[in-house]
Amino acid sequence: MSKKKVFKICAVFCFTLLFTAAMAVQIFAGGDGKEEAASGGEETAGIMEQLEKEGKVLHIIDWAEWWPEEIYEGFSEEYGIKIVRDNFASVDDMVTKIKLDPNADYDITLPEIRGMITMKELGLLQELNHDWIPNAQRYLPEKTKTAWYDPGYKYGIATDFYFLAWLYNTKYVDENDPDIGSWKMFFEDAPKWSGKITMLETMYQVIGSALLSLGYSYNSDNEKELMEARDVLVEFKPHMMSWDEWPKRVLLEEEAWASQLWIGESWFLSKENDAIRGALDPNGTLMGVDSLVIPKGAKHAAAAHLFMDYLLRPEINALLISTIGYAPNHTETAKHLSEEMRNWPGVDVSEDYLKKCEFVHPRAYTGKGLELREKIWQELRQ
Image (tube, rainbow, N blue to C red; front, top):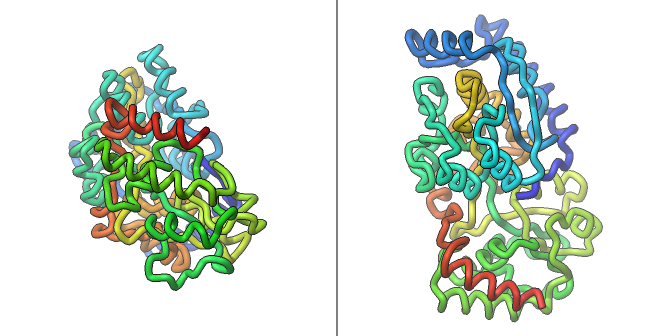
């Protein structure tokens, strides 16, 4: 998934002011605002002992300019751990790099679900020591604790949720429509917005949203269902303006009135044009996660576990969410967000809504599901 950094500097600055004030209150009240590094006693001693043996270094490979620098700086300052960072342009590039050299000097990385599954299948990941990540047990919601792709979070800690949705301009789209946000409305109302609609240039998300509009699974590999989705898209296509992975300009300049996009982008785009909104399909949609994982060849696993636990402190997780605009994979983070952000669609999402959403599944990108999608996609792109 392409990572966008809209308004990142402003978001970090605003949250830093709030964060500093909150920490000052805690300090003057007699606390230091920190969670324990582990649940206490032997576990704390165990990870700190191992940290001394392995050395206070953490090699990270992740997206460039995505997470706020304050997270890395705060962790390094607290634990005296030197962070060495490398970046990847895509998750596939990262997986290939580690596959070619399983002993590469990387201690932690950040794939999405498909990348994590691939790494697990290739034997490129090591199991996590849950005693060293007590904040995971404290704060992770059930949806990710029991996720099919990593039940019991054996290999990874999900850092956030993001949801496939569509953004719209309230000047041209009726935000009071009871179906607002639904994929059914997006496709059925297309004639009203003809020539003013964009869609992502990604086969899975385009076909998946058409499946959802019909009440089918995003991951369906049923030929009849996929052909029905194809018909929806063929009828819809004449009303499209373009395929566009990042329709920021056309949305802001109101050339596009509705765009398929990730819901988190609506928060930032609305700051430049307050007529832009986003809404989630009330019946559920595709949800994704980015997960911190530890490569098999990691030489500083203790530091990697400490970093995971640090990121799951509510106030640190809130700094992350305020910067990237996604939903927290955390039961307490929302309390640390501004009221405006907390109430924005797709940020403070209920457990009940999460149950309606789907993670990507291999049915969609392997075997018959992949073959049928490629056939449909080829026809749509002609």
